[in-house]
Length: 352
Image (cartoon, rainbow, N blue to C red; front, side, top):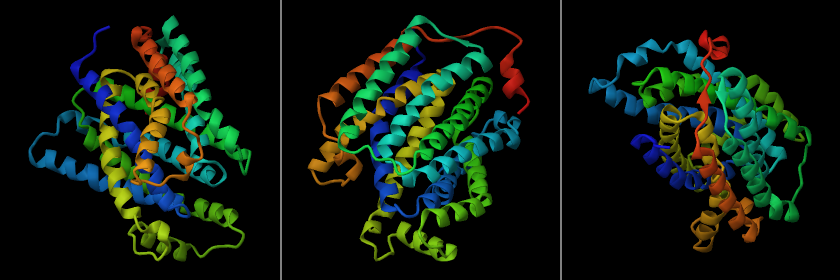
């Protein structure tokens, strides 16, 4: 199977960057451990607007924005934004009751979910290598969490498992919809598209604030002063708080934002020239690579991560990464194809 040069380069850079993206995220979100909703629903989309928007503005003044951008209605970007936001909000509500390792592991359920929805709604068809790849990857994921469950398998609220799993569905549908847009609009500017998606994510984050206030009050023994919560959260993010955990939060925000902006752009390239499933398969290498790179950085005292330290770096990690790499190669041995019909894809996504 031959690949476009853009796809090959995007895959290589994406695989190299995703463990750094994960490590930077863990460092940033742990610095804002008591302000996860504020970080994920307000701060991150706001910073994303500034980063993607600045690049979009550069393209605009250089007259490099194509007419295909104008053809994409804001309604379509709103749907992507709301799907991504629902996923972020629901998963964020679950984070106090689950470890980061558990959430990363559960996210792998997106693979069979994506395959099933793609089969029925995008008319994707799969070969033997795709099903074998799915089996190999799920075994690899199970191996990586064996040491973690051996040392610490506590989940404070079992309902969090259900709701976090539910949050995968909006993400999967969003990626399917992105694939539809990127396949049809070949010249769409990724930065322009992400700028407006981030705008809608910020809008939805603000609109759902009352729900999050109720959730925050439920998560604490005593009711909280929301204004005080936001004030302390912003000071922590700007590293102006006396809390020692906040002293590097601004640094890790910039590091994570830079890497995330790059990986996000690469992910759009992979979806455009490949598929959402290829992107999903590649992200499965993130977990073992995160441990390996994380341990190296911890040993040199560059980072401090409790969630990585909790898991012993062992034979499981190395077997897991081998299986995940084999699974990725197996999936791409023969790519999925789209059945030519008059199309359930249009029924599900065409009028959005």
